[in-house]
Length: 191
Image 1 (spheres, rainbow, N blue to C red):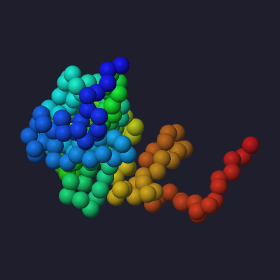
Image 2: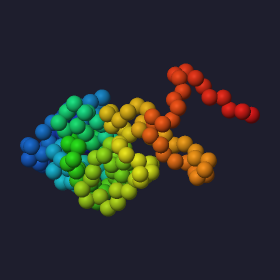
Image 3: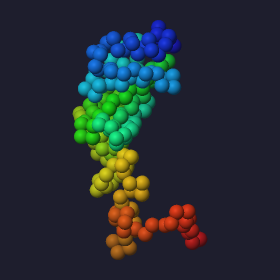
Image 4: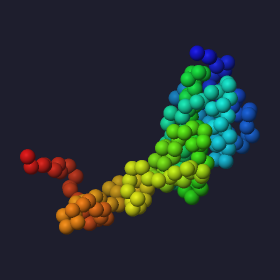
């Protein structure tokens, strides 16, 4: 295993920031022992390419990608990328913020597995990814409205799936049309 020449996370963060304009990486912090870089949305592809290809970085694995919704902020979505460099024995967190209607550049050309993460984020949060080859839904039906992981989405959801005996299939109905159980009531199934 190759050991990094940068002893602290802060030193390593400074090394990365030296390769980009100051506005491209406006913030650097260490959270729970992991270096976290806040990246300007437009600089994301360049920074990710550098992190993967630079011989000092070698972040060859995108281990996770998720989104957080902050409805009270102007840039209400934070896309969070977790990278791993096995050769350098380092982990890195990248955070990119965006507004509701502003797409984030896709990183599928750099990390192939980002395709699934980006599709899931699009479906659950409504964040779009510019340059993504296929943003079809993964987890919900095509006729579903809303984005279920946004903090503004109703806790009970907007629709329920019920069986329609006449049609002999499951159909979506607005949640107000389904009789709700009182809290704490457990349904018992006949044996």
